[in-house]
Length: 266
Image 1 (cartoon, one colour):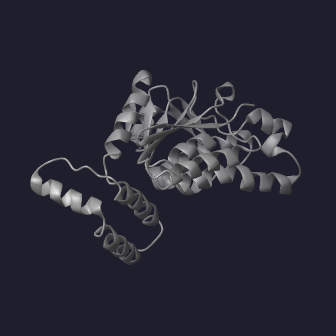
Image 2 (tube, rainbow, N blue to C red):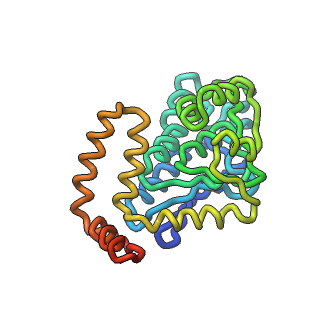
Image 3 (cartoon, rainbow, N blue to C red):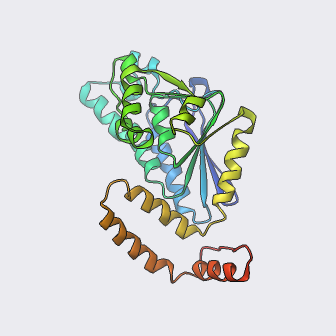
């Protein structure tokens, strides 16, 4: 099987592309977790990157796990129950944790089906844009397994418990238009406009001060699991640091001068 991910840079914007089109970008091959984690670590360490895009090569965003490999008991699905369990932890979950922990704002450009694990991957992005050819489903029950990729934690936070439960329990696959109606994606565009729209949005995000941008994403993530009082304390501590940056001074001067700010990460 081919490598699962490629990292490309274009100025302050990076693109992570799932690169297994012959298998609809399915994950689960041994080493996939390490590959995704390495790409995310490289991206996070590059302080010139201010926004990133996650997309799929070919006609799918990601079909999730490789059903043929599941049936054959190959790759991540090989061995006894304990080995399969550790395969999830040490491989698939490693990829998911890396994407979830990424402090760079992440846009999912969902170009085609995002099914099972593929839907979970899309939901780990901060913003989701979809092609009219995209579709979304968490079809684990249809193949006789349970949601094993953290989707029962992330999907209710994106679309609410009732709609998440409906998708999990029925295995239904919804269109991009329905996904937009439910708040799963922000925007639906024609296929040939998807990456351009994602890059334009990433470029707009990339105009913001880089340290403040990453800190804002961190606060957004922390805000999902801490009390309001705790969030206020975290915000106060972070704000105290930001007031001592040159980018804060530049932003304030730009407002008073009535001109666009030029943020440098200082």
